[in-house]
Length: 314
Ligand code: ZN
Image 1 (cartoon, rainbow, N blue to C red):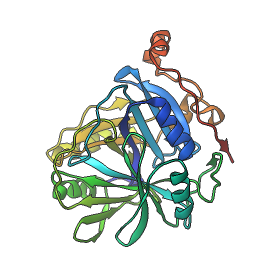
Image 2 (cartoon, rainbow, N blue to C red; image 1 turned 90 degrees about the horizontal axis):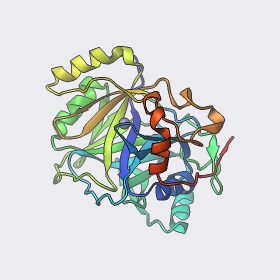
Image 3 (tube, rainbow, N blue to C red; image 1 turned 45 degrees about the vertical axis):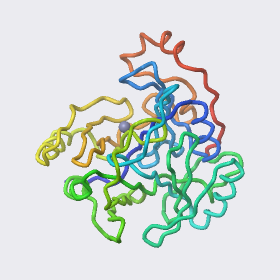
């Protein structure tokens, strides 16, 4: 519809324990913790963001840690697998690293492409795929060099209650191109350099159940908020119901469910995570939107104390 990079902006998931999530994504997987804030719709809960060194769109995974949250079930109406892109040749490194951290891995293939599948400590299904890409990361942690470091998302799989309608949404509204199909999957590719390969499962699985270890929503890139009225009209024209535009401080967002029960978000590339702290200090302190600042003392007392992962910008 518009000139923008077609691909994933971020993926948001539900977990139980903030520290366990910081340790796994920040140290084992070596992503940068780029923003420490709260769920704007529920300020007693953290909203933790991880990405590349600046949290570029297409690298960002976010978590809502809720103590005692029940285990979810992956199924229709959800993202199935969150796929990360690693440099060519680095899968053996990752297999060894994950196993050293007690994470069982499974070697698998989709469309003849090798990948390494595993679960995070909350049961979220994550996958690594090695693909040539011009995207590089400038963030490393102990034990991972830039030749192995995750550079961002490769893509995701979608489990839809209505695969044909989900594919129609991705192609007609979002601008993905249908490029391949086998007995199990339809592959769609977007114009972004990475975070752009989406595989939609053709079989309809039993409904997913939200909870720990499941994806809450997937956000797609839009250039800026000026285009939102056009997007909202186009979503209505598909028979779906977009929300109003929500201010998320680091981007602006519109949400909607597709006919396959998947919760989608359209998120702007701007202004990004350096809007309220410098690149050097991303993630170091609790950041709140202006309308929550007056409640900072109360919010800080409510949130569990966390220890930040260590890493280095190169
Ligand atoms: Zn989101």
